[in-house]
Length: 114
Length: 113
Image (cartoon, rainbow over all chains, first blue to last red; front, top):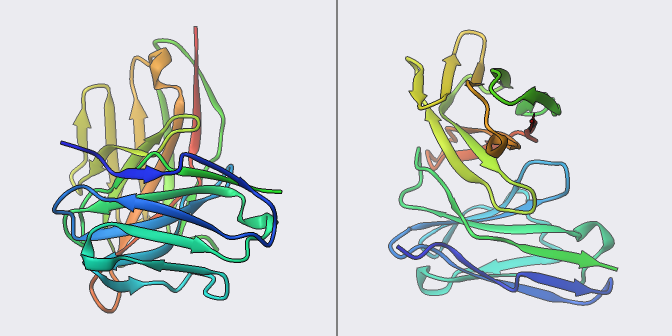
């Protein structure tokens, strides 16, 4: 079974530039999550999709971050403009259903903002 | 106060020894609990779910104490390969019933020869 695919693996940008990350969840997984993990901290949920609808985006900095999941399959997360504090690993995860299901993570995108 | 709190460690454990650590959660409505393992510069991977009656998976034992709102993980006969950060994850029921995973910051375990 193919896992959660993410790209790119690494990205280095300057502050105020824009960046986009892509995620393809495990086939058939209805729920998709984007997490931000800063070094030394646990993952923090940015946005959760159920199929192509947003379930929770309460912690997404909407002035600079946006995400979409067209057709309920793959998803993109965008940051525009980036700030130094956005330097982190961005993890995509998926689960089969929305409650009590284990999460499968992609390998993440390590973002460095200079 | 953080929703999920863990001792960051590191717990330095001689190979073959036993190590145990806890995680506390603040939301009494939390409904499911997990331990994830995260190796350096890798993604988290599910280690085990935690059930009300406690459960074992090989050398790993997880316990849940709902009254005191904590879960624990015990590793017996530690191996060098057990060196990792262990993330406590709690799924909270939300008003729309979707549920929300809350992660602790992780407990670092270092197994030494």
